[in-house]
Length: 280
Image 1 (cartoon, rainbow, N blue to C red):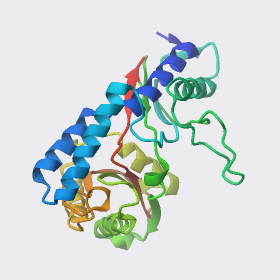
Image 2 (image 1 turned 120 degrees about the vertical axis):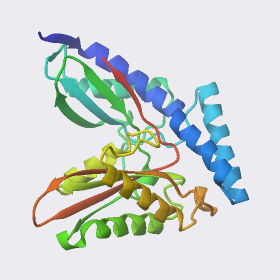
Image 3 (image 1 turned 180 degrees about the vertical axis):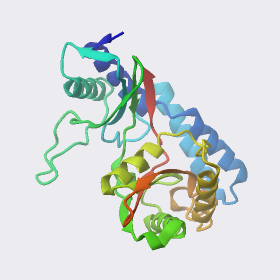
Image 4 (image 1 turned 60 degrees about the vertical axis):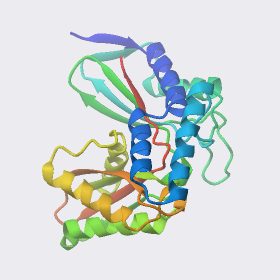
């Protein structure tokens, strides 16, 4: 049976999620900060982590953004194949929700023309990733992405001979080269396989996991943990002050690729690991 969902409902959900994501840091991130404080050897690093916890508390209680960079509006949508969207255009509904949320939430608008640098004024257009799935519901995940961490992301086309060791080395070396620029402690999304553009989307989608959620494939989960340990051995630490926690977690997503290719993407998320979701 086909279920009808109006664009008005989608607009409201996107508006609310954009504000919620920018005001309220996830419990998984806050728990990771607290655990890191207990295990951190560096006194300056512990102070940074305490400040991040206090910052998140102020944002939540005073209803202000966690960070002045409220990010580009990245939206992942899973649309049930039994859903019929009525009363308007889906893309325009997403953008309307972003416009309303960023205006009503007093969130910084960061979208601009790539050459003239003229601001669009309302943080649109949103970056929208759609997937059709079974069912009669719509799942919307709003993940604002700041420029500082996004700038420290890379895609490379490795040779198949590089193998998994080449992938590990690429990720670790790039996080090392990024240093303090992406505002650590970071979360590192890694996408391997597919095509050039698909690996980047996989890496970004990986960031939607909660800290501590391992890949269900035991072999891939082991690789995630190994990369995380290698990254943290560099001692870059929170905000670059040195310490045991350069990254809080590494998430790896893998898909088949062409026999002649080995695409790998690294999408780094700053300490403000913002993503909220709702199901209609």
